[in-house]
Structures are given as C-alpha cells and as structure tokens.
Length: 238
Length: 238
Image 1 (cartoon, each protein chain N blue to C red):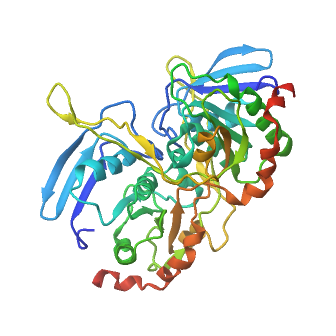
Image 2: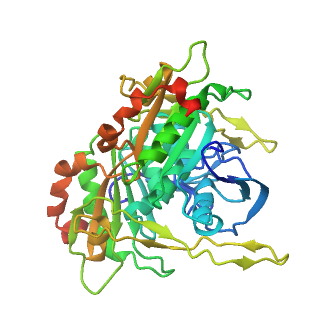
Image 3: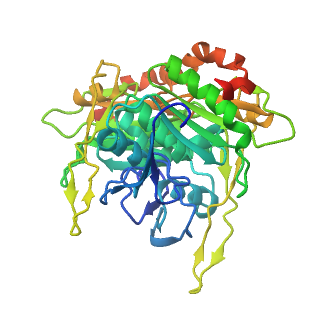
C-alpha cells in the first residue's frame, strides 16, 4: 500500500479471530500512535476491527480516506465462513460508512505462510479499485490461494460458496471435573461449482466476491407475502 | 413458546450487545443445566449466542429442533444495524447449520419496556413458520414497534433499510490523563420507503425481513467482470 499513497494503519492489540462485526459497547476505547514515518502512521487500538474503522474515520484520520484495506488475514475468508470474519467485518463497516473497502485473506493458516506471491495481484486489484471505485453498498472480499509450484492463474469474480463449520466438540475435563468444549471445527461445503470463491481458490485463482451488507432475501418475498394477511388478534387463541 | 411444544433454552451468561456473529475460539466453553421442569430445560453458557447454537444442536439437544428462536431482544435490530446483532447472529448460525430460525426484537431500549402487546404476533408468526417452514438459506428477522395507544396494525414483509451508526466519539480522560472514547451513537437512515423494515416499525407494523447469509452482491458482477482480464504479472510495474 505504501507504494500507492500515504498509509494510516489502525490495528487491534489482540487477536480478533472469529470476532465478526463486533463493536465495543461496554468499555472505553483507546487509540495510541505507535509509529510514524514519511507517509506512514501506525495506531494501536484496544477494540475490534470494526471499532478501528469507526474511530479511524471519525477521530484519527485528517481527511476522508481514498480506500480502506483490511488484512491480509492469515486464513481463508472464502465461502459462508465470511460471517465470522473480523477482517471482512472491518470492510463491511467501512462500506456501510460510505468508504471504498477491500479485504484480503490468504487460504493458509501455517505459522510460516508465504505471502510473497501475492504482491502483484494485491497491487493490480487495489489500483483498479482506486481508479474505478466500487458500486454503492458493495465492498470486495478477496481470497488468495496458498503458494504452490505454479504462479497464480488469474482473478475470478465469484459468488460466496455455501457451507458450514462442523465441530467435533469433544468433551474435556477441567481440574474440578467439569466438562468443557473447544470450538475447533472444519468448514464443510458441497457447493463447489466453478462460479464459487472456494472453487476458484482451490484451482489457484484469486477469488473476488462483491459483498453487500443488505442481507434481505428478496427471492423469498413472494412465498412469504401471505404473512401479511394474518390476523394478529386471534393469534393467542391457537 | 411453551404453549407450542417442549422448550430448551440455552442462554449466555453475559450481555452480548453488539457481539454480532462472534464465536469463541480462544477459551473453553461450559454449558450447565440451570433449570428443569415438565417440557422445559434451561442451560447457561459462557460463550456467545453463536456458540450457544453450535453447542446446542451438536451437544445439548437430544434431537434435531423443529425451530430455533432467538430473543426477544431489548432494542431494535431493524435496518442495516442487523450486522451488529448477536440476536440475529444466532439466527443466522442456525440457518447456516440447516435449522429453521426466527429472531425477535423490540424497538425499545427502556429498562421497563412493555413486551405484553407482542404475544399474539409472536405466536402467529411462529405457528406459521412451524407449519410451513422457510425457504432454504433464509431465516427471519422480526422487529416489533414499542407499545403505543393503538394495537399493532399487522405484519409487513420488508427489506432491510440501509443506514449507519454515527458516533459522536467525544474525548474523555482517564485518571492518567489519557484520552478514551465511548462507542455510543445513533442509527441514521434516509432510506425510509414503505417497503423497509424501519418504516414498517415506525408505522406500528411488525416487520418481517427474510434474511440470508449469502452476502454476494450479484448485481455487481457485470461491472466487475473486467477484473478477470488483468495481467497479474505486470501488477508490480504499474
């Protein structure tokens, strides 16, 4: 990003895996300047990524940003697992607030994951978004394949694959003999047509999912319209 | 709900306002039986509403539930503020996991908010969902107006109104003289056509928004398709 313009980083102090679109309502939010150099400022915040966006544009930045970039996340945010993502949470918040926003994630959880194969793609996508903007109410969820022997094949505009996390939830016992569980599952999907983000990433393409915060299922309107003719006053009489 | 069938409640121990679709990855999850009577069991969990759903169907329930109900939330989840909602987070999780799910919220934050005017509508909607099911991948986000002099006018199938929270972020100072902020804003919208949930609730109707976890903005596909022709190898040389 520093090759493209002035950069202001606002990062969380804690790991925010699976914090989704959480905002901090019950405790005070601090933002402190941690580093500064020519064209670069870095702030640390004790809140969530969504808090960082809110504080960032309303308190930290001196002008409206040209672009909000979140990530790059260490782990995939492709498919419907996106609903848990705090990386994408920040992007959606920025989009709701009227800013142009992109989230980047790498499909690799390895501690020594290689990010070097992504520079060209990140620059290409970012420059295009800066030059052309995005449709109103739309942000981008970009996922990259992990490094393999071949170069990236290209970019695909995709839909979010449908799936779910399945947890084994094995019972553990603490020192008092009480049962507890760890939430450690795996994302399972059988929605792998070539137009999905997961298919693209698995085939060494960069997936770009245009993403919206309007969750209305308009396709369900017709089948639910008859709810409007229910007589509520009789509801208690079953 | 107890007039309709056996009820198993799994509730969080902490207030979960604005926790969205958070799941607990870093700490052990406990669920303990707190109350039991004929046709009723109540469990308390130290996690989030999403954790409650995951543990509920995979560990607590003895059979697949006919319906997952979340709420009733003390405060509106109409409009795009839904992205912060942990009440709706639980509903979306249940929907992703394949269950039929409804979230109820009341447009009133008052400590002594009156919920008694809602019984008939809650029963009517719940019975209809139990009888007819919901389209695949769709759950319901139901919002009720606060009690006023007139009875509820009826039910409206709505789209989610677009808006955003605007925070004043006034600077406060702690005992060490450091600046901190409180995230206390108000939801601002000018998207108030009669087909929106916020308009319906403001006009004393119950709003029912069919809600999906597929966030793909398909309307943006055409305008973004030319991303696919970018040459990534040249991206660094721009």
